[in-house]
Image (cartoon, one colour):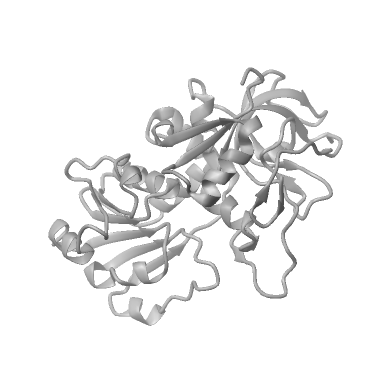
Length: 329
């Protein structure tokens, strides 16, 4: 539980009694969302994409997280289509006496049926454990209009950036991932026609101009300030597409006038829907999206404070961080 800014502890809590639409699930894995959970724990957000501002209440205590997999322990009388013992994906469950009435990293988790998905046949539960965040990348990669061999740039080498890049590659685009972390960039395919660029090592504008002399069709922004998007406008094609998927806090103003002359289309994506999570699980099962290669750290839940210390303080390189709820660990 996040008890105060920068303070996370493993504690026991009491969850509400299951209702007729609820599913009780014993967790196997839960995937930490580094950016979103980190910003909530630092006290930077008051809601999903709403930054905390002076005068807002402090969002503590709360149970962080919103994505996990596990096995069904019990079903409410009104639940159909699931069975006890079945492996499922869960977004969030009910909690009480917290700033938010929902949370993700708790077991057993009592979740409304609308927040539970049966896994497709053959899908590794560990691979599915970050599916809400995976669908953010899928949504970002599906939004822009791209055709085979079009040039697309993904700004940010975090998890959403990787899944957005994977989606664009599956659609046939040539993808350049831009980021500042060599360890993360090396996890992205960089063989032609796909490339990675670290602005600390190259002049990014010159490198992108050489890579895509015909112009960039799509820019997907997943991390960093808005200026990182606007710097690429001159390299974009007329009628190109910009996707904003990164949390930019209170400094998210964009100069729409600069987008008007080249007639760029802006897509502001956020959140998740049931249909998109379903599609994400299908893409993972089909191999169109890969998540297992992005997992760099796996902690037994008893060491959850160490996992969050890693995420919050960045004491070593990391990307995908998963909590393992197995009783044997």
